Each structure stands twice: as structure tokens, then as C-alpha cells.
Image (cartoon, rainbow, N blue to C red; front, side):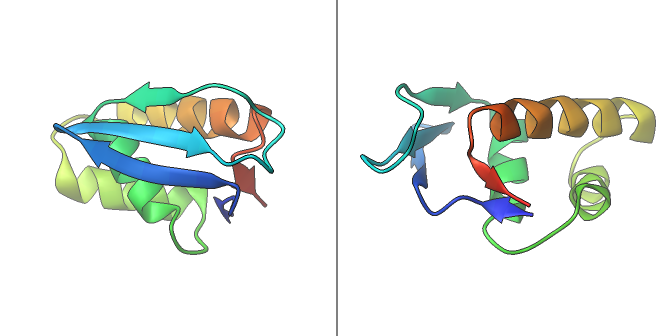
Amino acid sequence: MKLNENFIRHQVDGQTLIVPTGSADFYGLIQGNKTLSAITECLTQDTTEDKIVDALCARFDGSREDIKADVHEAIKKLKAIGAIDD
């Protein structure tokens, strides 16, 4: 899976913004924290949910189960708006 080309990842003052282009079917703005930033950073290249969890476990303190749940929820929401290509 990978971030859809119709969505642009942008950093502003430590916040991650995901902005749809005019070609996206989603209209709005997604604002996130450093966790979303790390997830979308992984999604700049083709990856898997497990690889994202591994990357976040290496970067952040926290239980693998909590990180896995957070990643799963973020991926689910990004897929729902069409921001991720499988």
C-alpha cells in the first residue's frame, strides 16, 4: 500500500497535513500529530501495515499492541477517504 498520488503530505509547525488535490474524491483537510506523520512518511513508498508498525515501534516508546492498534485505525481512516492505494 502507498499514499495515493491525489493526496499531498505537508508539514507545518510540527503538524502533518494531508491535502487532497483537485483529482481526489475527498474534500477536506486531514491534520495529524507526529504519529500520523510517521505513518504517512512510511506510506511515501510501497509498504505494509506490519512494516509501518515495525518502523513506529523502533521510533516511539509504547507497547507493540498499542502502536499496532493506532496504525490500524489510521490506515482504516485513510483508506476510507481514498488516501491509500493497496
